[in-house]
Image (cartoon, rainbow, N blue to C red; front, side, top):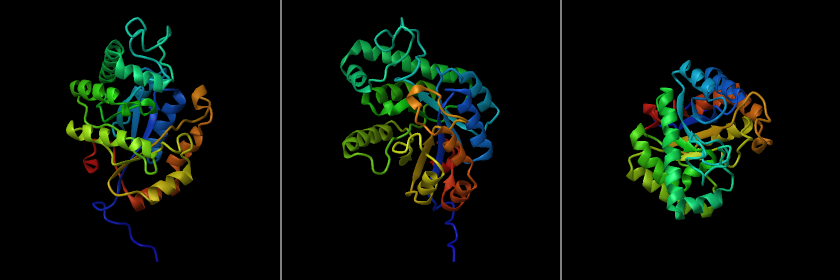
Length: 278
């Protein structure tokens, strides 16, 4: 005999998010399909990415899609020209991928930190210029876990209606992360900024297929969880994502088995701004 689903008020709550919205038309197409045909309810927009105009146009045709800012401070393009932030990007305006080195520079070098603040403000401004409501903020490769980056997000974000930030705490995360995650959680709460209680997608990044989603949904902890993916209609989008199974992740979002599991086990939320998520 199958147990009946718990009432909506007692079930775990879930936000399903696509990161890298705007990176490529194949990502934007997957976001639209995932929202219209599947369980996707949110997307994080890269405002400096090549296909951002197409992403914004699609988002405006899907007013139920909760869109947030996916800050790019590593392995991507800047909003400001290289002449304004010469210590952050190369001559093409591209951030590097040595996040340890850059993290030390953000913390210890005031002139680098000043440029970082200017760039973060520029990306907030670019999102505001789209006219889309700001549902949440997170950072590419979770760089917002860095205390300096988070401080700037919180201070600058107040000018742009910041309400929610992803807390990148996945069950089973390494113990070395716990002090940083605890500090981040305290600072978000002090600032009155909402966040999730759990996240899923870090350990399985690029491989969040149907079985992974089923395992997550069927064993969700209490509270608010965010499950994020990198769906696209095909692979080989960037060299750094060569091993990502983008199409499998899109298929998981569209899977009838996943839809049924979501209906049975949790309450699906339309982003952090959904009253059910608070």
